[in-house]
Length: 75
Image (cartoon, rainbow, N blue to C red; front, side, top):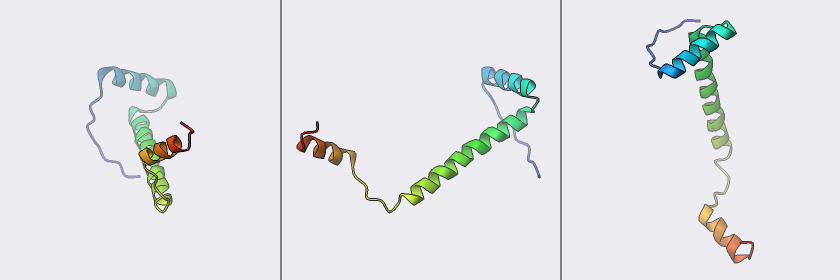
């Protein structure tokens, strides 16, 4: 797999924690950062899929739901 080099600036405490985790898990800092970014992007992709799957659903504004609950005596 081809890789690209990038400069990333971390908060000092986060960088220290990242270096310690890298040492304890026998992974490089780059591996840990790549894994974290992949996880974040995977979650974004899952969210986008969920939005697409629900695009055809009827949308109920929160205010309307509260008014209906109040009108029915449930609130």
